[in-house]
Length: 169
Image 1 (cartoon, helix red, strand yellow):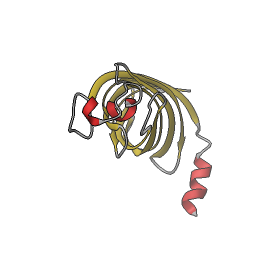
Image 2 (cartoon, rainbow, N blue to C red):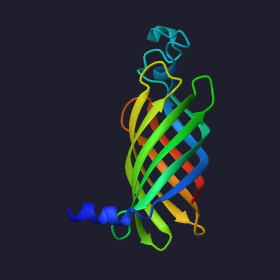
Image 3 (tube, rainbow, N blue to C red):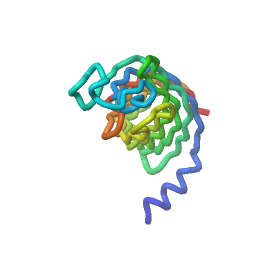
């Protein structure tokens, strides 16, 4: 109860932000585009006999976030990002991570939390839960850089490594 009361008092420190960056993603292109490519059976697929097709490609992301203080050096940062990975088996996705951030040092934050990823152009297995783990560093009062791993727990997403910049208002 005390935690909730402290969180609501600190929530007055609400900030909005935008972010963008590059990512490298490993994912299962077969699961996402089986119907698009008329790959109804494994025998039609070049990786016959394998249950997945691990693709890997470089893409980019853009999005927005909210950030508000909880208690002491903890902050909560829900986000909404759009991800695009090009290629014949690439994907476009909406990602919704909810991160808890902790400041170990001045301007340096460790961040972790669950995320839900939804491939907007996929045929099958469009939902993919994941766990995000990363760090950010405030370059100036409102500008920051971040490095994050998005570790897929099931579905189409394998692991994505994200590197980007952001601006908080």
